[in-house]
Length: 358
Ligand SMILES: O=C(O)C(=O)C[C@]1(C(=O)O)C=C[C@@H](O)C=C1
Image (cartoon, rainbow, N blue to C red):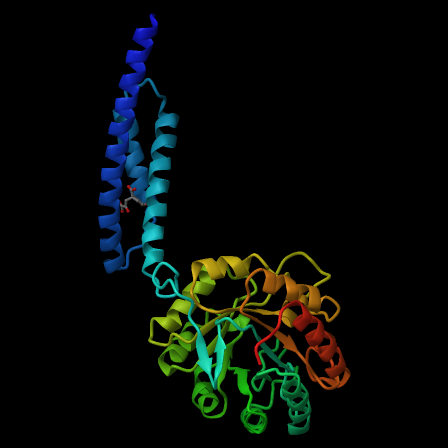
């Protein structure tokens, strides 16, 4: 074969490549139309039965030279690419995504911007135990410039025999102490029946990891309009976290803060595994603020500072750390809460690394 013959064949191939490209692009446009229709009708995007029928049809028509397995493989790749296209299209429509809203969402509560240029710190005990305990923590935190006070009134404990929280009394204490020190207050709720009361006493509700997919709670919080700290479930993917946030935002409440709090892995030397990669991924995929819970992810005090630095370096808008006046007598999670002195050292060192807004 002469060089010019080879050249001619290659030219033909180039033309066919362009034709194939045009054909698969036309196909993709039709798939997108199908996707819109499926979305309207609530039909799942992935349809293995349809894919299998199309493959059977193609194999029957296959005259070679490719064998049937190769034909299946080639077309399966086209179906896969089409499905990815549908998923990308679907993601573009989610309210929580950057594709839908490019600018960062900043949540303003009592003059503090969460998700803006200043980093925020949420601190306080695991559980509200008494007025005296909350007063002591809040006085110390406020003196150091911390603006957001946490404390659990309703506790989601793994065992029903563990302390379940003070309930309404806990919310009242948070409200009183928050008011005395001009701090923003946040506490977890586990059921939509607690929402109304929480709305009367605190500034922001937390949806804990165990409730990330409590869809009736997500809907109720979405309807309420109250700012919400939404924690990632310990076995939840980032996509699932964003879809849970979408439940809230789609009901008109755009004041959602995402929180990475560690995921369950085989590692035993930490309570959970802090998924640092979640931070830049969530910041890239979503416009919502992203915070990192240092205490529940690590479950220990000695690595809180390096993990805090890592979270900030990864782009987190803020951090959460548990602080108790005397963790040794705490009614819950004593081993992971910092005492006031440990917190002061932590916060001093952290501010040297990255100044916090106050
Ligand atoms: O026919 C459909 O329902 C489509 O969504 C199109 C299509 C395809 O690419 O052919 C895409 C994804 C499905 O898994 C099955 C088929």
